[in-house]
Image 1 (tube, helix red, strand yellow):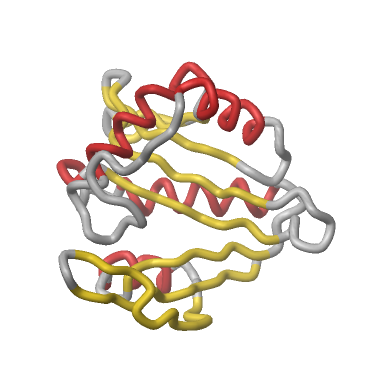
Image 2: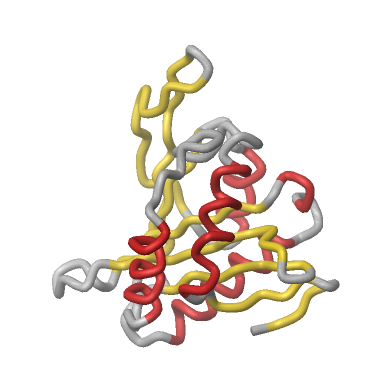
Length: 172
């Protein structure tokens, strides 16, 4: 899709499935802000390949990979229902390897997702959730126009403590 300082951003294919599973299992241990921890992204390879293929065929869903030398360093997705009543809403997910944070990659991935969403002809709203302590991400989301829509109290249990989840949305 595009190149950013030796980082190549492109759509995921089913051939990326194992590398994506491996990436998620590593980054799960790098951050308390994901919905899973280290080695908790349990997916069967065939099932995940099928999921990637199905998602890539949906006109209102996308999976982007950020890579350096073919190694995944970030994944950004918008997943949407195919049901008539809710297909206009996409759920955004983004994760960047800890080693590559702070270089603008999250912003670049978010901008690519939002540009795609504005152009797909279906998506009218983007929703996301994040840990309320993830202030860097929340600041980025606000800068891109997202608004806080709600708070899910004690929604995550991390290292012996309950944490709230912020729900945010952006109308396109």
